Length: 124
Image (cartoon, rainbow, N blue to C red):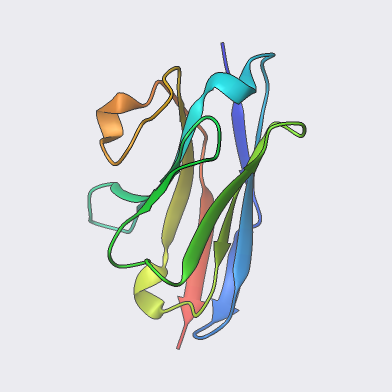
């Protein structure tokens, strides 16, 4: 069983930055691919970014490409999402997800474990 706990959300002005963290439990974190998803009010949960278990490959939604960076520290069992040049449309609850596979990609159902989410609000 893996538990995921997100942190780092908050209120920021457009153009600002935030860094989300997702701390995990479990001894085999290094073998899990990780992803970030987000859900805005009234919308479906959507893919944001993913990283391979080894950290060697990443993927991003077109809407965040060039602004967000996903990374991981296997020694700390933590995955990060650095969010720069934030826009009001980035406002959402951000969820961390893990899969017992080398790669999860952008498919929500590929992930086995989910955190409770952290709110990110970008004001104009």
